[in-house]
Length: 327
Ligand code: NAD
Image (cartoon, rainbow, N blue to C red; front, side, top):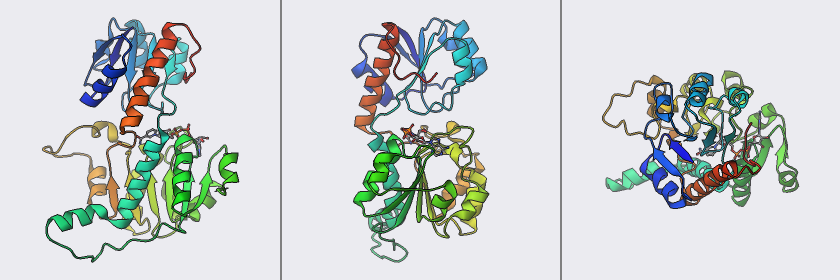
């Protein structure tokens, strides 16, 4: 197969080169969009990541250029117009589960850092400041944590929380019987949000979940609660969350994803003037911690992403059942 791989960094190329069974791969640093779709002429397949845009017009151009397969090297597929891909007869394959523990552990890292302020302590001690003023946190033991979406990642996160001695409640349109047997209590979204000290989002971004965290649902939160999002930025209405932080209702915010991240994340803008007023406002809060979509970024997850992506491509080439097909 001739495969065009978009939005690549050196680390993507290293893992793909290690696991490539012999396909002809061309790496593009650029994302796939209206401007770059012309580069796909002569390729059989494209491989994309979380912030590549694959709308109806781009799909039509991909098809005209001879592309017959869309391969996502991630779990979420909210950035692909699945209906149009299906109508054009182009299978969309993804990596449904690759080390869910990688993302679950990152959600925990955000919680522990926000709570115990280790990022601030690190900087203080490096400057010879050994004061504990304003570093006080709280015990996770016995805290109430709400998990929204208990699929692969949410489930791994529940298991970690149980180890910390947290009381875990959950909301999912399909409750998990195994988790219920382990003492995890499911409720409605409203009940689950209202009862928690920490809320962590692990459901996919779809029309039905877009901006599920908004002014109305934030008003249900306990005052001072912590919100963690390692799923997709669009689950949160950023303007509403900023308002809640300004009113000191939301107590902490930990984000690994951000609705407008496509224009920022994975790149170095340290010498540029950032024009996005929402992210600069978020960065200005002392109780907000942002990482740039690195939940997946462990050696184990990168190996699995490469292995499963090539298994998906090989199944297509051999005409086998496409187990990880989205459409
Ligand atoms: P999954 O499909 O295994 O689980 C998703 C769960 O959400 C399912 O149990 C599903 O029933 C539930 N769900 C669906 N609609 C819902 C709704 N309206 N309300 C509540 N729950 C709902 O997916 P996963 O592997 O656990 O991944 C979850 C999300 O994490 C992905 O969609 C992706 O966006 C994100 N993700 C982020 C990173 C990262 O690096 N930060 C990496 C991988 C995945």
